[in-house]
Image 1: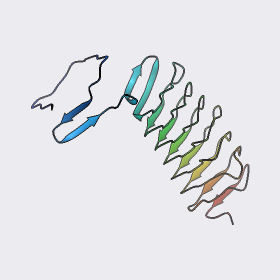
Image 2: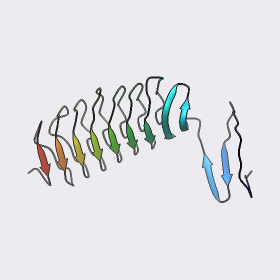
Image 3: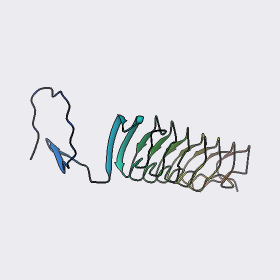
Image 4: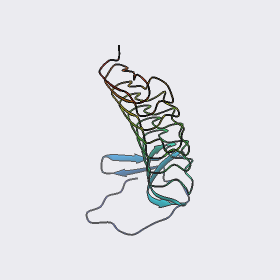
Length: 174
């Protein structure tokens, strides 16, 4: 079936069933059984925005103000706050992590710390960082030197690697 409208639609509805597919004009929205589209508050998840398969699927009432987009983005996040994850498996292992920004395929995928305050932008940026805090990683595969670095800034492409805690690398570190 399809939905066609010539004026504004308003109101609300609740369903415990499956919609399968929603067609609006030539566009199709399909939400599989493990998919989420949540904006606002639901089940105690205050101010979370989720879009994608398995995205934020483990959020609990303590996990608030997160924006999660892409399959498995923030999928293990439970009580973490104020995170942004955009990309498949971005922020994928985080549980109680807070104040992180992960943009790109598998960005900050291994991170699982508390109050990480990390920023990773790029394909695989910060993918191996597990317990580090206050790091900025920008570029294709940009990584810290160790998986627990703190205050490391790495800006570069083609797998640029940091030099350790409290260091800055722009370009290739070699």
